[in-house]
Amino acid sequence: MARIRSSRKTEPTTFFIMAVVLLIIAVSIVVMGYLDDKKVNALKARCTAAAEATVTNVTVETRTRTVRRNKHTRTETYKVYISDMVYEYNGVPYGLTDERESNYFSNGDVVNIMVDPDSPDVYYLARMNDGKKMKIALIPGGFVVLMGLIMLIAGIRGKLERKRMNNGMSFEQWQQQQLQKEAALKYSTMDNADTGFAAASENVPSYMNSLNNTSGYMDSIGGTDDINEG
Image (cartoon, rainbow, N blue to C red; front, side, top):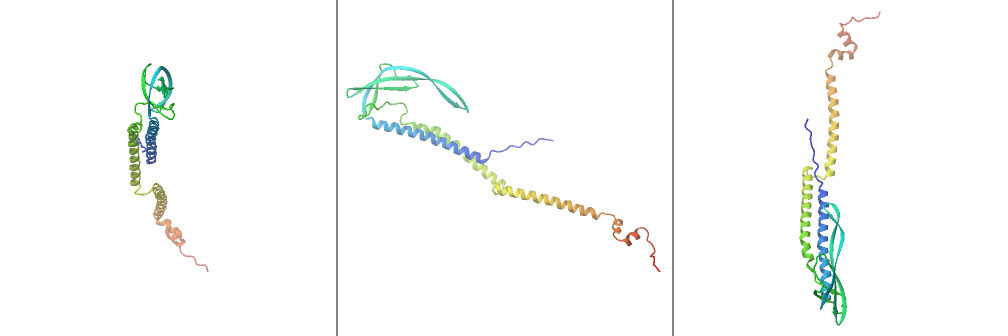
């Protein structure tokens, strides 16, 4: 006998949950990019005075960080280049430290910066992609949104398919209908059993039925003369 394999389809609710999670992730990516851009733009608006900073020392540090990829967590090492700089504003010296994962500066380099005239210790040192984080975030964010929409469509299709299979009824209505059908089938089976028993009873030999009365019984065995008492 061939073995029947049943494949259980993913519940539509699961697709809906996945869609919501993906959409939340996408929104988070874009919002983080927006907030970063807003912070940088506010700093740029504040720092309006130009100055020159000189790199005095560059050191390298090896650091570790935890990275999660493909549901696996691992620790990786990376290098950080730390550049110490000095600059002057209105004859007053200030210092700053810049950290990057690439070897961007060397000792003696002169770097253009912007400082806050009211607080010269506050500075802005341009970095790649400053003010463009949200635009960059739209690429992975858009991809995640697309995946979320695919999950949403799959959930809707699964919901409609289930409704079609249930003749337009909700799952609870369909379940109630199945219980009613099972109950009707059970009672129908019991009625068929009673009918079969009655039909079998009708097939009893006629001479057995004659036992229901004495005269019939006497006739069935040859009969007797009536006895009259004097």
